[in-house]
Amino acid sequence: MSFVVVDVSGAAYKEIREKLASADYGDRFQNSAGRDVIDLSGIALASKDDGLIDRIKDLFIEAGMTEEGARQLAAYGVQLGTERAKGCK
Image: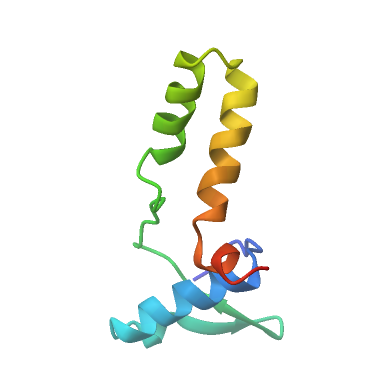
């Protein structure tokens, strides 16, 4: 089977690998051209924010902020809520 390799951050790769390993999908881990890859055939990914950025953005717009400014601020706020950001000082 052939597939396209899409580079993601190390953190995203690690999280996906851990979730698949814990769900007994170890057969998805392969090597392609000397790189460890995960074959995601038949697996769908979804965002964890579940529309959170859009809901926050709408609140900022209602408060009078421009749409672009509200989108950027909402995305930044959601980023601060990630586990990685919680560990930053």
